[in-house]
Image (cartoon, rainbow, N blue to C red; front, side):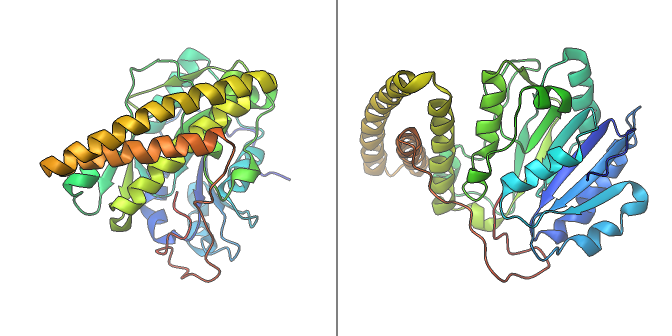
Amino acid sequence: MTGVDLGAGTVVAVLTYRRTHRLPALLGALVEQAATLDQRAEVLVVDNDPDGSAAGVVRGWAARGVRYVHEPRPGISAARNRALAEAARADVLVFLDDDELPCPGWLARLVGSWRAWGCAAVAGPVSSRLAVPADDWVAGTGVFDRRRETTGALLAGAGAGNLLLDVTQVRRLGLTFDEGLGLVGGEDTLFTHQLVHRGGELRWCDEAEAVESVPADRVTRAWVLRRCFRSAGSWSRAEVSLASGPAGRLALRATLLARAAVRLTQAVLALAAATARRDARARGAAGATLASYAGLVVGALGFVPREYGRVPAAPATGRSGAVAR
């Protein structure tokens, strides 16, 4: 049984897995922003650690309108679906990752945009704050140069790191997060593509910004290449799965594979030229392109690489980042 009060028009959900050290600053910011809305808002923490490591930290915020739930089933999809269930009586559910902080006015802008547009979902930008400077190779990939769009723009899909969902419309569209992708990644890509495919509107609010703290172990060539590979694979897998019938999926796969063959060839030539020039930024850009189109091929063919794993024993301080989201 869910515990959302009938008066909670907005539920802000933070999904966490052994990152308790980040929660106090985030919860403080969310409580402050929730108080600015003219309708009651609740902050919900969904703890996806089987050991429930966030319970002690979060329950200390109960008097300030923060609610804790424990979702021991492994995977980000299970945690997202638990948030959907807990927000069943709310008007909107807003997702924010536990390694992000909202900018001033973030929540009011998201909710205000949803009220103005009446759409099924509103996405906002997530900028990156790097713990260490990126070297020229990593900077050249552009991975940390996050997406920006014009406010009000219609989108074909988005991530769930900064996303508002109209609960009634999501229910009407019959949407949940695919739990088969819970330890793989890309569940949010598939979800938002399905939302649009089934007739829901997804719009952009460029003023509703959140900032992600990027630890040093992500500002590396290996991590960036994995992210490029996984992100492109998530996109192509979602697109192919939503194509119309076997013939449509076959045609789309052929189109994607042909596009990838051209772009991979171009990227190999660009990498060779950049290497000859000793241009680290250009090498990074070419490497990211190679990883992305390799991922696109893998996703189009239906393969699902397992990016996120679970470490059996990790410190309860939340600094291990065993599942990087």
